[in-house]
Image (cartoon, rainbow, N blue to C red):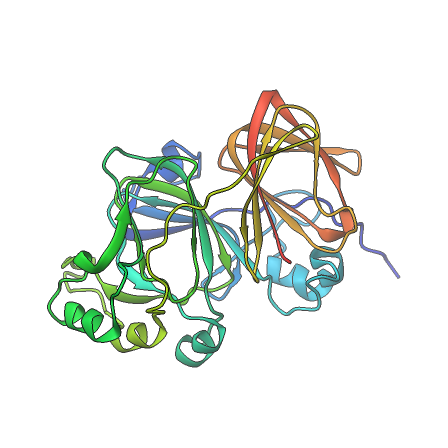
Length: 331
């Protein structure tokens, strides 16, 4: 009987999504292997979904799907805080909004199962770049009721009810399920979310899809899942704290994931020291090297690396004296 070698840090092939609002910055800025087209919208970095399945990029497990790893080696990969599961719980992606996205809203878990045969979708964004004058739409203005929103949808006047602000690089915005939102033109960001592709489109700015027809809207579903008590949503405010090797910001703590930003100036540690949960690393500035099992793994700008729970804590060091890394795990 053969024994599988221990799991090490995992890098996956990006899954590139072309949509009408995409651009070329996933390639020109983040180094993704895009083609000649001008509509590359999303790069799914870690995904275990029917609409995209990550494959290990290199090493002895090259070509193995994330879903297969969850199925066959879930205890090692996920850790006791998360396993057993039949699906990896989080989706990590990069987004390039060359044009404004549709105004949309995501369901919670119960609504997602019932209305979309999917999980609910809570998500968080960290802005990488934002052109001057760009906009984030997040939440409805105070006092917007369901009847008022329904009337605005009927008459194409949704924008006047949306809370909006101009983002800046580094902003983190948490979008709970039920929050009406849209990413404006000129914004590029990293996103961490539940493993879900459940989206209800409520307004598409009067444009048409590649077939020359308006893209479908999901008005009834959107009205059902929108949380009208949510109100405006703005950037997360944090208190950075010194840690060994850098500065740490706890950006988001929600029931589905923990998201932090680590600004490295020296050697630090990443991963769960108790081996209870996995950690995803997302490179947002400079580059850093993770060491595990006698091997080194680079996390550069626009790259991701998944640390299985079983490897525990790992040392991480910046190249050139500084790096910025998002770390993501589960409660």
